[in-house]
Length: 144
Image (cartoon, rainbow, N blue to C red):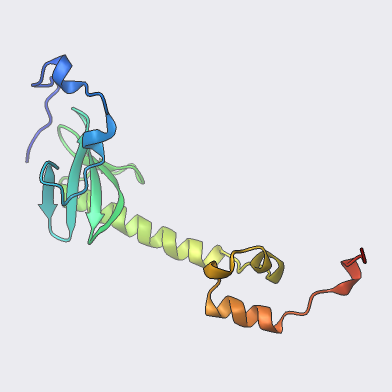
């Protein structure tokens, strides 16, 4: 296990850049990105000394951030301390999957009036079918 250092090995001038987001936003495919591969995930170093911050990728999608402390790993979704990066990444992944399911079950479909306000290109075939069957209530219409 690699431990984070409290002191930067680079002089202050080198550590500061004209574009501070330059190294933070490197994708895992960038040759300059510091990537740690663990089974099922890629961790891309973002910044920090202790804890070190890593973006977690599953396939080609970022699922969140985990943190490497001196004695453990953690993620931003629970208060657990994990012994390994893989455990923290799996905990994050599990949380995100549960959050997606819970959001999908609590979201309500937009009303036909809301669908009429969307751009045509953004409507799905199901939206179009709902709009075909929709008959607006005429009691609120006013002749101009």
